[in-house]
Amino acid sequence: MKAAPAALPTLADTAELIRRREVSPVEVTTGLLERIERLDGALHAYITVTADVALRQARRAEAALAAGTYRGPLHGIPIALKDLYDTAGIRTTADSRVLEHNVPAADAQCVTRLYDAGAVLLGKLALSEFATGSVVEGPFPAARNPWNPDHVPGASSSGSGAAVAAGLCLGALGSDTGGSIRIPAAYCGVVGIRPTYGRVSRRGVVSLSWSLDTAGPLARTVTDCALLLQALAGHDPLDPASAAAPVPDFTAGLGPDLSGLVVGVDREHFFGPFVEAQSGAAVEAALGVLRGLGAEVREIELPLLDVAGAALNTIHLSEAHTYHEARIRARPDLYGPALRAYFRLGALAGVADYLRAQQVREKIRRQMLAALREVDVIAGPTTGTLPPRLDAPGTAMVDRFSRRSLTAPFSLTGVPAISVPCGFSADGLPIGLQLAGRPFDEATVFRVAFAYEQATPWHTMHPQE
Amino acid sequence: MSAPGRADFRAAVELAGLGDLPPDELALLRHYFDDWRAQVVQLRAVLEPADEPATVFVAAPPPAGATRRDREAAPGAGR
Image (tube, rainbow over all chains, first blue to last red; front, side, top):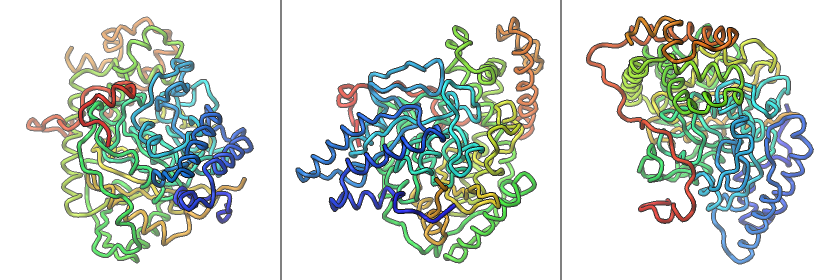
């Protein structure tokens, strides 16, 4: 690793330069397209690079600035999308043979919001097939971790994590069903937030498990993530899960002082033998930093989290099966073997299994909300493991059930959760700190993450090129 | 079908109409099934009769992206 070179500015820094007209959207876009051309052959972060679209949008942004129109901090900012967001006229594959030649007629609502805010689309990013955990069977090459290309970048928003970490875009959208924003953020040493369920429209996003799917951003810093979520958040009457909740200014409360904040830690669930020692030590050190910033760190107990993974898996496989049932019966050959078996597993679950899982989910949610009345955020490692090698046993879907998920409890309960870099292993692989908050209180999650980030050096470090 | 039937792999596969899958595909499905059924037992262990299903989560996937004209026509659409 090395200190940040000038070639990797943050989204917020670039926005300020564009606003002051010290750099043009076309210059920024051209520079990033050159980086993609030079570096992505080894990383495979992108499935589709939309250079023509990007340059056209950048020129339009530049012309608007020249005419005195500035749309805000995303004006002229090049971003990229996990390849399950519908993009009008641009292939959207979900890394699946089923959708390999799918060209949507309309944009996902998130894409419209980013365009309305002035963002520039660099391209569509790699993911695991249909956004399912760690499956690597799709038609496109698996993305690699920029910190060490022999290791996975995390799933399922693998290209989003890799592209942000390698400086191949200034921000990206991922999606998170059981951890698919936070895990690649942790493994790639960047920031990623799963917003509250209902905070961001999922209209036009390929579904995996509709009562869990959540759209959200990954970026280099907490501020960058907050700026992206600001553009994405808001009610969409055409998404049945969308909430009509007020959207605060997510950057307004960012600062260095955490006095008065209470950070909850459930050691039984988030620490123990299933967490690698280096990850646990990095997160313990992070808790010390939070104390130093004025926060009280308080022990809490959430015993039902032991079954959160079981409830999530049962709901996930039932809903995923329902979504894919007709297609998988008609053309099973278009699905990878492990994914095919996983989606078929949902056919073996009964209605009673699904409803029991939803009952358990409600019990866990009540326990979680009760804890969040006593503390402002809950902290722990984002993952129990360091990024595995691409060829390591256990990276396939077949082993997913046996693992304890540290991200599942917050997915299941629909609360916002962020992963922020908190250190590196001895081998130079990133480690993530997870912070979860009350429903629709992303502002407090950002506040704690920002104060921690600014007190530590991790966000200034980038992979060797 | 009763829960014990669902807990039996062969019965569940037949009920789902998957009994004619090739042996290698059935073997992988069995691997997943055994692991998942063990988790279902955990779920039952924490439930009590008075527990209610979650009511805060929607029961349908989101629609495909609408056209710009659709969006503009929707009451309250936009930020």
